[in-house]
Image 1 (cartoon, rainbow, N blue to C red):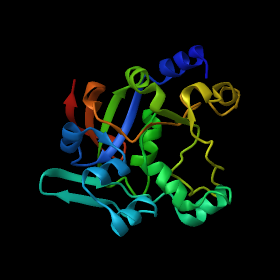
Image 2 (image 1 turned 135 degrees about the vertical axis):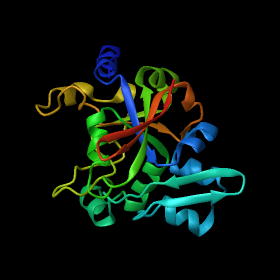
Image 3 (image 1 turned 90 degrees about the vertical axis):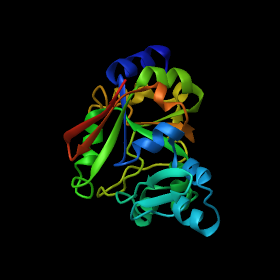
Image 4 (image 1 turned 30 degrees about the vertical axis):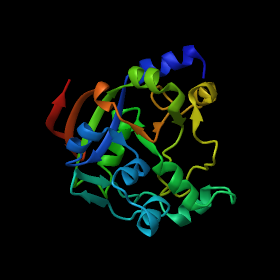
Amino acid sequence: MTNVELEELIADCPKLYHAADSGSWKGITENGLLSTSALLDLYGISGAKREKVESQRRPFCVELIHTNLPRAVMRDQKPMDDPGLRRCLPSRISPSDWYRLLNSRVFFWLTEERLHRITNAAPYRDSEHEVLVVDTRRIVEKYFDKVWLCPINSGCTRYPKPAARDENTFQRIPDYPYEYWRKKKKRIRGERVVELCVDYSIPDIMDYVERVYRIKGHHHRELIFEA
């Protein structure tokens, strides 16, 4: 991706969207926006319990409780499963490898439409979510060397033919084949990158959050925070 292409991406997608479990905002304000692996580190989870959460599919949300820390929830992975991953991963990459990779990063959607596909999906439309709206440019400038871009929904294998993926599905900004995806007929502006993620954690997330709102399905219910 060239600098000109990056500017186009930021112009098309000036905001990033992160959906957290309802009630997560307090922990985010205190500890930053953390990946699953970072949460497990913070809460001191190790051994078999950690292995089950970090390298196996989570069919349900997992709650973390600590006497000195706010409640935290690691979201489920219902749109993804082992059989689906085996269909779209090369044999050298196991489902456990893929779960570990995803759990090591903090994820954002680049459009609100993509966000609504998840919050309005059947498993989630009756639940409330807290959505962080973040300034794209400022995140990219601060975390440039820790940002990955992805052209697919990396956590979904529910399609009849899930998108193929491997260790090169995520690319650093300079390496991302933006021009290739721009030429795809169905890749309109806002769809040339589907996910943006950051390694491990964003401890200073409060510097980039513009607003936080509660949502159910695709209906905004309450503004929680505005910078």
